[in-house]
Image (cartoon, protein in one colour):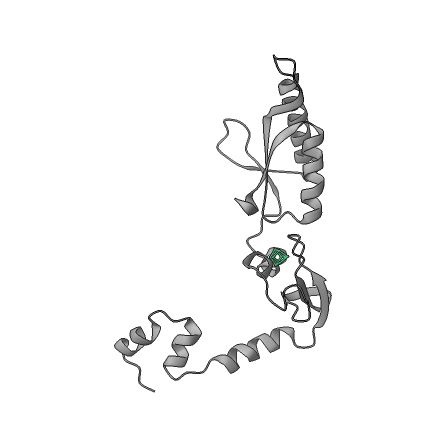
Length: 188
Ligand code: SF4
């Protein structure tokens, strides 16, 4: 089939990639379905729950040789009926991503280069600085005598990839040491 540049632009305006191909008379649906089928062929389907928020969407993880090869919405879930929000839909890329940084990188004050550090070293360093800052900025009472027991020297910002349990424990820890400025990037 001969497709002119004008035909292609006309068909593509305001349409999805698949819609564009369909408008050009090219049906990609069987190709897409086949590619998906191949990826999960012979996979074990494991029902699970999205870890991210309290909606609790149902997911199916496809596993081959103990390795997750695909994660998608579970159509049997009464909560989401197979749908996932963008965050849940991207969970496969979170667990299998060549761009994921797996080393602790540290740049000392004034330094220009990052250096790799052991995880234990980084955890101890964070704990030391958190304790030091908290102790230096902790206020029990305001000048008018009001009891506050807080520290305004620390702001806690959680990341979108923190799951429910991690957020729960983290907010408990922060409140326990007097931090009141607690936010999560996922809702900003
Ligand atoms: S898919 Fe989205 S809405 Fe559903 S539980 Fe996960 S984060 Fe929440």
